[in-house]
Image 1 (cartoon, rainbow, N blue to C red):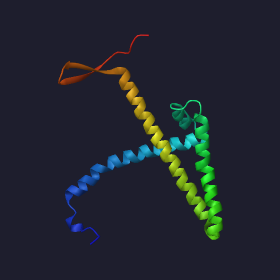
Image 2 (image 1 turned 135 degrees about the horizontal axis):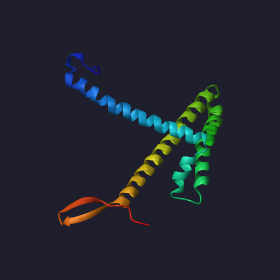
Image 3 (image 1 turned 180 degrees about the horizontal axis):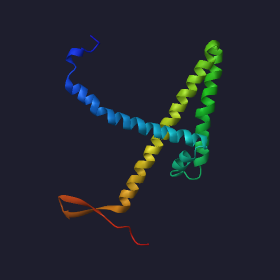
Image 4 (image 1 turned 90 degrees about the horizontal axis):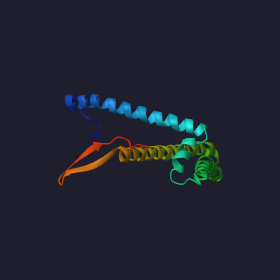
Amino acid sequence: GGEPDLATFSTSSSVSIILALPVFISASASLMLVAQAFITDSWAGGIIMEKIVSMYQSETSSVINGWTTFLIRAVVPASAMIVTSFARPNETQKIALLTVFYTTWVLYILFLSALVHYEITTCFRVCKKFVCMQSDHPRTRRLTVLAPAPQ
């Protein structure tokens, strides 16, 4: 059935688990660092998200950021609380708190994806500025690091 047989648990499986632990710990630490940045940014009024959004829409970045945060943090949980107060009056607080929890996760995922997008875009800009492709032979190419252009 459904349960694993401990007698067939091999040494290679245990070595694989041990070797995967540093990657798991590193990934967990990275997610916690981004979560700390998310909390700090939330308490500061969304400055990081505003700067990331302003890369693409400079005129309306603070308005979009403010309305998105307002909708996700206030309107959706309040709407859920109002609807559930009519449907299930004894579970209103439970459903409202779960809605706040899930909408915070949605906002965190948006923050995380915007941050990753910003980091990748910045990496490509740096590569474009300092690395160029040179063709020595029609079939081969090599990367050559260039010095910054004089100003």
